[in-house]
Length: 85
Length: 227
Image 1 (cartoon, rainbow over the protein chains, first blue to last red):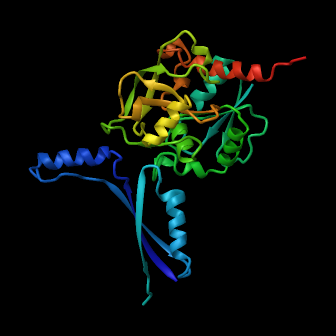
Image 2 (cartoon, chains in turn purple, yellow):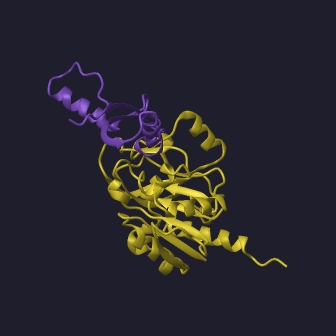
Image 3 (spheres, rainbow over the protein chains, first blue to last red):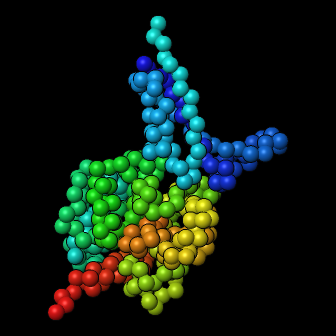
């Protein structure tokens, strides 16, 4: 089966995000004073051909090995089956 | 003594590293392309700075899976000197050969300047030549040099004397001002400043040369003929 997988990688809570802080300050300058925090992350979209019972394990493995760095980053993902019409 | 200079696609300090070893240190050096699989015949391994794989995904994240890295891990396990500078340090972190990770510099700017370093451990195989110095001047050139590790790791680094260099002033937000650390065994050193760019007074500083000389001294001592 074909899956579309969205992987979200974010800096762990407690790890300072210099980009997020800069963007937060910029939003304050624009007048959005209510913005308390900005955290910047990445979204990766993958198309993967896999069996239903292995897709989850495969994506986890990819995240742990390469897509995220467990020292500073957390990840979540969504998988969706691509149905060909 | 023979040094391997690993070359990844996007490395750009490989020539400086080669020049430092060959011309200033007077030892043998050879380039090793990232898709090689063996480091047989080399006594030490140098991972140069640059932007391997364009720093895509994270600095060092893709280079870490280059075929040559298995051989680098082997050399590290055998106790051979392994030095990663700048992007080389990032690759060693991503490979898990050193603890921690790099973040964007705290102020987001790329920093390129001479930097004063404090030498925290003078008894490593990379620093015995610095017996008389408290601080040295070595240039940095990085955008992702903001070292991070959690408190437990920091305590381990301190307890084992693994912190070798710290920045005299906080330049990039690094935890404990860390500029360079070794592994627990002391034979793998990662550092953001570029010792290979400070090997001659003409370059503004020759303080980096002693680091390479320390490696040679260590190697000679290990290989001295004892009868």
